[in-house]
Figure (tube, rainbow, N blue to C red):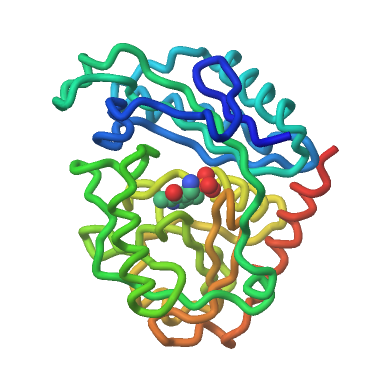
Length: 287
Ligand code: PMP
């Protein structure tokens, strides 16, 4: 039985899951998306992901043809059709088929696409030993150019930063905002620990409001770890005791080197470890 992909209310075999070359999602990156995880047959934080999707769509004046409940049902239907208990789900809403011109009003109807995939985490060894990352020259887009809070199909900004990182011989990039403060990574949010306090850039640093970021903030509260949102500079990163990244796919991954400088002891820190264990309990422990 092959992989089944949901497109506009129907399930198609992977080979037959196709959209038009006139879809503005393809022509202009005009659309929004979500990456969601299923643990033990249960969709993790689906409500938060759908809220963010609807907010992103609203910001770009794209009207999703399904309501919250219908979209939730479509996600569940796709998971069931694929018989999945642990998976990654990509939910994509494109502007739909239009002309070759930019005009979004010429697009007849947005398309809803749901793709399921197996989970591709970083290798387990990196969770134990930590990642090596660099700050890159590609800045996170200024909110008045393309607001990073919108999870749009236009990811070229992030892809360029990823290329910068790969050119520097590492897997992930830290992007600064146009004011020189730390924003986020190409597909993950960033946290540091300094003087026993957990710190992460605020939303107005021009970042995506990560669902995993929100979970980590909740866990910090629950675990009585002092936490604050703060504008961070490269200086703050270099003198930090711990650093980690958060994202739906990566979950919580320790960072042990930034721009060639070891962070803290050069090994994943205690607070990072504690949060990662608690996060795994929370997700794996779901019934
Ligand atoms: N920042 C960016 C730019 C991202 O693409 C992602 C992944 N969607 C994140 C942060 C992390 O967000 P989440 O925890 O919701 O996956």
